[in-house]
Image (cartoon, rainbow, N blue to C red; front, side):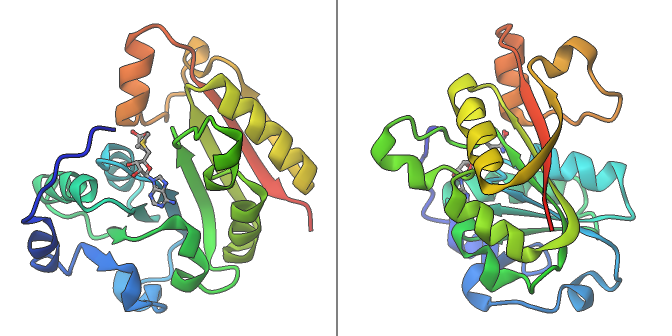
Amino acid sequence: MRLRHKPWAKDFMVEHPDVVIFEDEKVKDWKEIFGNENPIHVEVGTGKGQFVIGMAKANPDVNYIGIEHFDSVIVSALEKVIEAEKPSNLRLIRGNGANIEDLFTKGELDRLFLNFSDPWPKTRHAKRRLTHAAFLSRYENVLKKDGEIHFKTDNRKLFEYSLVSMSEYGMILKDVSLDLHAQMPEDNIMTEYEEKFSAKGQPIYRLESYFKR
Ligand code: SAM
């Protein structure tokens, strides 16, 4: 993703505390923030927000949170959330997914979405991949017993890596697809990257997984 420096980004986010939460606020009371006890679904690496906004509008009984660590990217998501009239079941966190255990209590989340995560192709950067065992362990802590990870990508090597990483971790994989769009599920909400890569004719890989416990 090309990053443009946006010196106004921080101030713009601060002006919308009803949408953007900064990770160092160490928020814990999501029930109070959303004003209900509905399930919480989180996208790590939400980018410009198209997916979480679409999901929040389609599923008003689920609370959605998009986590994004670049100011210059999350402000585009914020602009879209404002355009969508700030759905009450949607928040953005400006922060690093690696700190997810500081943001949620044990077993608080029902579902995690990883969409078109950065592939980090060099072996020495494997620890940065959002499906590395170090991340899976954090997700295991914050997900409910039957909580699921839903992962989509255009990147075959990242997909293969993730299948192995999750299997070796002892996760159960289900609904693995090597071409999601061949039989597009009716409820599939496209992400920005999904639109871009599928328009080029690239297959979209997808899986669902959960922890054995
Ligand atoms: N999910 C969006 C989509 O499918 O269109 C964006 C995909 S983009 C390739 C990956 C995004 O994840 C980038 O915006 C990047 O800044 C963000 N990201 C990567 N690692 C992250 C992390 N550890 N914490 C938060 N955001 C992260």
